[in-house]
Image (cartoon, rainbow, N blue to C red; front, top):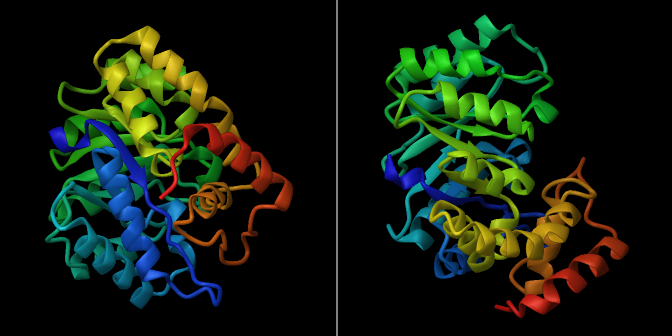
Length: 295
């Protein structure tokens, strides 16, 4: 699936000062990312604060991104959870016509065994009308989806076509690339190790900072895919400080601070998250300034 090669970005959900969804800001962010050269857009992921959105707000976000995108880039939507039946019902009831794939996180909090993870994804893939991208993010879920489980799913279930791997463990990334069948995409879910993943044979990244600096980040990934290693690492090191800064006080507080600097959206996040501190905002503004990327 060529749509998943390169730079995908996990879109934020911008809020107005009253914390309602800022449709205009979201529309502008989509245009900014498309114009910046990213390869696909991911809607309603963790970065989009999907866990604090109502069903109606989720639909509003989907509709807004779909209209703003106007068919220009492939779209991926986040549908996941730790209740397999509920995930299946959501997949059956959601209109996925405009989406190319579904990103589904490994079950969190109840911490299933590897067999439980396997059966969960097998069950939802069987009902999904769109291909599934597995999402492994142990720092949030409390459990690690091991490479052998991913390889098993990749071989057994035709509708599972990729993994967003956000363990930050490059040895695990390499095991996935080595063990998964040809055509299965290993996608970095960690900005700091995205280039290393690509150079090891991965397909690209679903990035957070990539939506704030879309041209710069997607050019770095493109250089890596083209095996222009020196150029890719030069670009990586220019972005490296920002990769750390945006996660310093949690995600998406940092990336929303970048959008505030750019004049594209407010920096507000919904409780229990907190807006970036003034000190962090200053550091982020100082980082962004040399790139001269102002909307």
